[in-house]
Length: 372
Image (cartoon, rainbow, N blue to C red; front, side):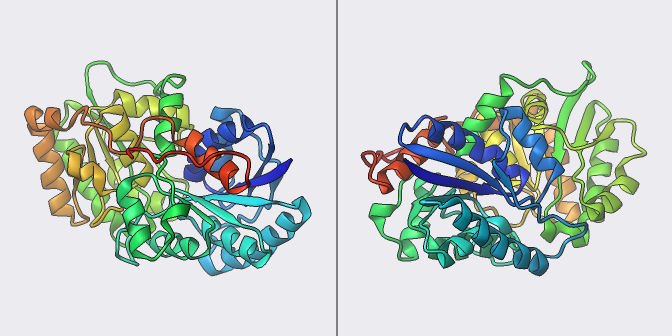
C-alpha cells in the first residue's frame, strides 16, 4: 500500500483538492492522507465541511496578520517533520499558494516525489498575482509529475523545459468541485425582483488601491438600483478596512461574511454577472455559464478570455466602472458571454489526477490527456 499525502492550507486549495481526495480514495492500492498546513484556518475548515473532509494532520501554522517570510519559515520545517513521520511515498500539492511551494520544498528536502495539480498556469508577471506567480513557477522546478488543467498550461511547462512524458493535461479540478457543490448548495437569501451581481475582491496585489476599486463598485451600484450586489468579504482586516466604508452604506449592496462553498456556488449560479479578482471564480463562472469581469491587469487563465466568457477590467477604477456599467446597460453583451464552451474542464479532472499519481507509483496505466 503506497501512502500519498495531499497537502494544502487555504480555502481555494481545499475546494480544488477535494475531488482529488475522493478520486484517490477510490484507488485500491493507495492510502491517501490529508495534511493541512493551516495557512488559513477558519475558511479552510468551512470549505472542507461541504465535502465532508477532515484533515488527518494539521500543522496549525496560521498567526494573526502573518507575513509571508515568517509563514514560509514555519511551514517548511513543520511539513518536513510531518512527511517524515507519515512515511509518505508521494506528495500532491495544488496551485500557487505559499503552502504549495513550502510543502514541495519540504518534500524535496526529504527526497519524496511531488505531483502538482494545476501546474503550468502563468501570467508572465512576477508581481501579478503576487506571490502566486513565483510560488507556482518555483514549485514546478521541483516536481516529479505536472498536472496542468489545459493544453495552454502544458505548453508553458514545455517552454520551461519540463519533460512531456511527465505532464498530463487533466482539466481543472475547480470544474469538478463547482459542479458537485452547485447541485447541493443554495444561495443566501436574495431579493426576487433584482438582478444579482456576485462580487469577490481580496487579491494581495490589489490592496494598495482596493478602496478605490470599492469606490468604483459603489458608483456602479448607485447607477444600477435594479441590481443587488452580493459581496462575501474576505476575513483579511486590510480588505475589510478598504471595502466597508465605501460599500456598506448602499441599500443594494450586501456585505456578507465568507460563504461556505456550497452557498457560494449557489450564489454564482444565481448571478447575472460575477465581478472578481479570484482565479477560481473565473473558472467557476465559465463552468456555470455566468459572465465574469476580472479585476486584474493580467490573468493566468486566458482560455476564458479566448472563448468570451471573461472580460479583463484591469485595476484602474474608471476603467472598471466603465466596463461593468457598460455590461449592465447592454443585455445583448451580457448574453453573448453566457454559456460559452467551457475551456477549463469536463468534470473528470480529479480522476485523471488520481490515475496520474497511481501511474507514477507503478499502479496504473498513464491516463490520456484531456482534449488530446
